[in-house]
Image (cartoon, rainbow, N blue to C red):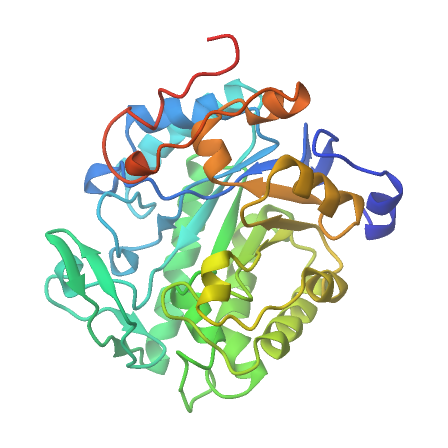
Amino acid sequence: MTLESKTLSNPTLLSPIDIGPYLLSNRLVMAPLTRMRAPENCPTDLMTTYYEQRASAGLIISEATTISTQGVGYPATPGIYNASQVHAWKKITEAVHAKSGHIFMQLWHVGRISHPDFHNGQLPVAPSAIAPKGNAISPSGMKAFVTPRALETDEIPGIIEDYKTAAKNALAAGFDGIEIHSANGYLLDEFLRDGTNKRTDSYGGSLENRTRFLLEVTDALISICGADRVGIRLSPSGTFNDMSDSNPEAIFVYLLKQLNPLDLAYVHIVDALEGDIRHGANVISLETLRASYNGTLIVCGGYDQIRAEDVLAKSLADAVAFGQLYIANPDLAERFKHNAPLNTPDVSSFYGGTEKGYTDYPSLGE
């Protein structure tokens, strides 16, 4: 579907859309949402209920899912690197598909946003040995971030292989596609930004070099999934996890232009949030990003129904992802359709816990 045809169709949130090989029933995307309810890094039956409840989204993007033990940086977050995880995720994809839903898995390596407690005392890895400000959520509580170990050049192909294995496992678990997590200050984002990437090898310095790792991962995953089942998430204006860049517009416009010929399923942009602006973000306008990318564009970042409809009407995006609204409203598309009241998210139950604030939000009529 060309950008012109999308523009002419005057889409709304409830309009269908082709993303990759799939015709989605609407343009509401459930954003990836870390909930920390996967003990021993393995999905549970409670998670199956949670995703099944939200299957009326046009597309669900799973919570960030680690590609390897090296990629772990938070307690009780799921992985996709062993057979038990594949088996558990398969229950979730089958439940979503039984409700005629679609679900992509977000593949994640946290990079420096971790702690030696997750790695038998070994240091987390990063493009450069620069510690983030703040605290890690370690298995034994909050601890100051440590200075990570800079990856050796010859280690990078091994991480790319981890991404490929994770993608194969995601397909084996029944996912419709994968999203590469290259946002929010995690490993791939760390390579993009010159605030965290001070390398002098072929992965640092120039725009070409700083985008090299992400583009190599993307090519590798296209070889596994096909381009039309690969998406990428980016946060061009983000400051979360102590991120910065001297010229973010240059790096992200360059990157988007490199992605154009690949015919990906989509690019998923995280807008600047209030916290980013408060922390001095150099904000790149959505207009600039849209002009740089010719393919399907998903946006997210605190959208409500009115703002989402406006961004679609202006052809600045093709679909909109919702986070907190999907936490509290499993039937969000139905509520938007009928202009129904929305449940209020319970912030205290976002991370960890049981069904409270997870699977007990009522749908309409309950």
